[in-house]
Image 1 (cartoon, rainbow over the protein chains, first blue to last red):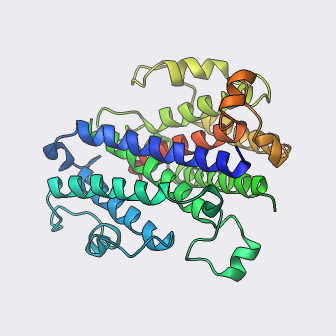
Image 2 (image 1 turned 135 degrees about the vertical axis):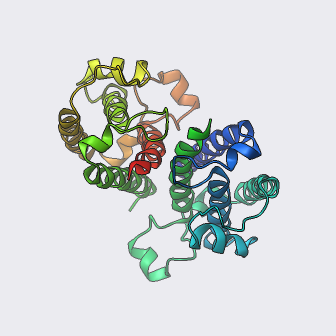
Length: 159
Length: 159
């Protein structure tokens, strides 16, 4: 196992463990529970679900894996804060999108050889990457993993 | 920059960014605010602070960097759940311990060459490590980074 193989395994182990933690919680929470704010006056559970879908969707162009699949969700769940008035998709629909997206991302990720994860992502130029080689595709997975853990610490409050 | 150097930088960048996120929040919150639960019936902010100190303290023996500095805190903040009755150190004292600990950990981490981060931690045997080389010291930093992000997503609710 090369040092790149080991690193890729470490970070993807963390990514999938974080996805599992989120899924276990999500499956435990009813649609009604997801309508509740995680704390008084804060985002609802369903908003966090939509937010994660939008943020993970944005990984596709960054990783050079295609265009946004759900561009409308970025407006709702990244550019707008939560509010009870927000017109958002039905919770069942968001659950379906989430599951489909997790599966699609896994299929895409599985195709990438370890060494390619250490190549640059699309938001960095060749010149920048020559000086800052840590701005690679694997770093996108890493930063989205801590982002996911952050919101999992919030969703758990609805249990 | 070797592939090990790049990986170590990526994971430590994330660790220190997560520490900074936590510190910015902590410095924004008064001692009185930290006495509040992050959501109705859940852990208090001050409990999360003590919990992080205890979890980070436990990194020392795992990384072969010495013994626990605050063994009593493990009983209070890992083995016991929060409750308003819990007899815990003063918030000012926990803030001081936290700052001192962050500085001490950084000093220890800075001394370790990149390749040594890919060596085994103390909770894995030589035999296990031969088969599972991802169970290395760097993985301890990675898992504690997602743990820290999880609780930062909770502390932010007190803002």
